[in-house]
Image (cartoon, rainbow, N blue to C red):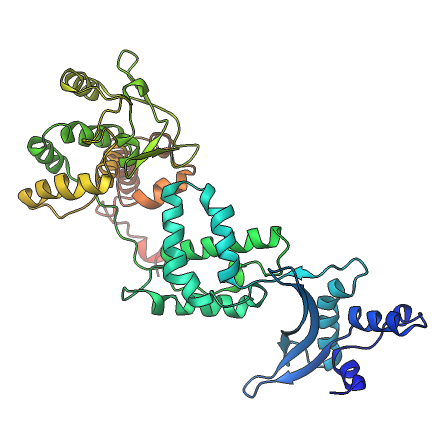
Length: 420
């Protein structure tokens, strides 16, 4: 391609930048200022495409000039080439600005390696484990070789659409997709803060799979809980009672120390959570709080303490190596055998927390009280998870409305006048 054709395709010289007389000044002006090139592309629906050049700094520190292409809009949206050129000019304003500096560039794979060292290493082990799963199963296989600056809306949508193909399961839930998108959004946000050229993820521009039918949160009936506790030996029985009577998460209950419990004041404090034998901070700031201990649980804890064997950390529950047990091991080796013996479908320790919540709502507790007990940041979270539970206060309100209407009462002779 000739020198003149380069100017024709990638822009003309800005008049106020071409004042210098030396070839060096003119060369720099051509390199910095450009109008780009606009053309139509597509058969079924023609689209305006803008093409231009931009300097990027490689992860190695070297600068190179790359060609960019961007979809400006359809022929229907922009009927004339002049309108398309105006839209491209808005995009090029950043590059043509006098204080423009080249952005940094790297592939997702290259950047993620740095991100794991500098950012992921600072997260809680439980959170980091989920993120590593997202990286291994979805993100790196699909976009690992893609440059950060190429991950625009079109590639973002392609990533979402292709996620089920990367899964070992038949379908990928909407929640899983949102979690993976949240991970990749965090990576992109960090890259932008570090000066890399990339586009934010705007969920308004993306199409997600439709919501599935919401499944009911798994919980036990009162009879089932009583039968489970009757078969459970210590210390599992006390663990199950804590989760059921006070609604603690499995990790919160397994991370309890006697210093967190005041049997005289009948309160306990959530200060940590146990995850695979290691302690970490609670799930959120709302989770780190003080809860009342019901009288029945006070009695259970007093009896348990008489047979409790001391350990250096003062944990209520420990394994042979004096560390909190893993919730997965408790479920697999202790809860499931009991459920199998009672012919109750298998589930996790979280079912005891759901049972506590269902009983709270059924007893007439307000959503605000339930939110406080479960330590949800938003009451809507409580209602979304446990909206299937119909409490007595709810039922009485509906019955009151029905008694006012009383469709089974005497029929008015003027009914046909109002109902047609």
